[in-house]
Length: 349
Image (cartoon, rainbow, N blue to C red; front, side):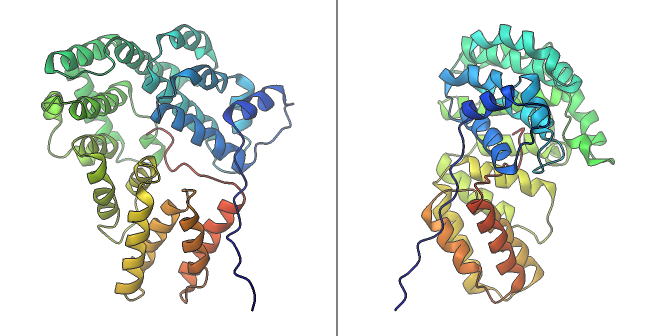
């Protein structure tokens, strides 16, 4: 009897610090492979999401000109430089370390014009707000934090909402890159929504009252902002099933699916059992159809980002799925894991 083979292990990621050190010393012909690019974006975002405040200098080092040049050589995406800048600035805002403001101001000359003009002022405003009112647990403290944030961003709430209205119209036009480059007011509203969610979780029940004037059709104006509000009003335990159900609500793939997949990944390993359970339900309960294929593909792609041994088992099993669409997808995601690639669906969330 042949022994049962263990799932092939993924190639471990290099650390952010080792990657940036290497890229800063590399010559101009150095190309960044997909797994190293994935490691950069993944670790940058995790530093912000996990509030690893002691690593703020590591984030700043990724904005070195040679690192920014190197990420544009990767085959993983055609806009590597954009995604790295977006991820780093979002992470620095979440950390809220005032020591990072002066170095950021010094480094801004290396940023692309969009980031200097639209995103950096809002990020610096958030750093001020996070450092001065880190965990508001009362309505007064939350109001203080929100007011400080908007003031430092050079915006009134009405100005931010007006920017949202314009962006909502613009984002419906071609090319779709319009979606990437949200204006300062929209970025501010997204960050305000995230901070409101944190205040809500800390016991401020009216934290979202500030955003009630955004309108009922918010999901059409800016689905990221809408998603931030929906998540902020839910507990961690409620988010995962809600996200999975919303991801699978129809049979058409859209860019919004990427946002949902990214937030599911951001929920951490606790999302794995729910994803596995949903995959098993789909396998048992539906005939193969275009919707079935899409839903299973979305779930597999999301699941494949996690490191749990269960992920390898599911992917290896589905490599033998009788439907070639599903088996091919499983092979693709399994091969990606074995190469050490850990993709980020949306860098600027």
